[in-house]
Image (tube, rainbow, N blue to C red; front, side):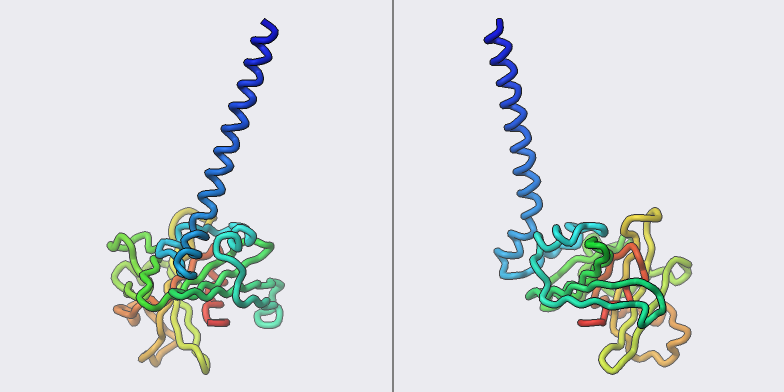
Length: 223
């Protein structure tokens, strides 16, 4: 009986060890899924990349997935806007897109993706009639409701930049519910009274995701 109990305990412990090893291997395989696809495709981001990350993800995990940034810099908002925020920006350049990651306290605060070369990078538009809207193909349409009080238009004009961004809010408060759709600002004289109707038919050139809509203003800081 004693030997039976010992064998039973050993067998149970062995089974638990195997179980946890399998769980660890599955987590590792899932974590490396995007990384392997990037490496196998010569630094090309998968089209559905936006669904593989989330606001609040640690920068260590981001780097495990897409590697180290090509450029990194820090902006002290106290010098620009009079507040105490320190904004850290990492810029990644792949063959099919630019990715800008804004992080604070080693956590992802915002991500902005600008694609090219017919890369078909997907964006998120919860109320779109299209199943998979594509950056560079999707246009401002009737789903951008100008009467929605949660929507906001931002814009910037400088020697190098001329763009607009339409910010939308979807879902419950908290989490990453702010979305920004960027396009080229052109042919508009009255910049004080911008309306979404003025952008109808304009192509969405970039897409942003954040828990803080104030961070969307950093779209052109290094692009």
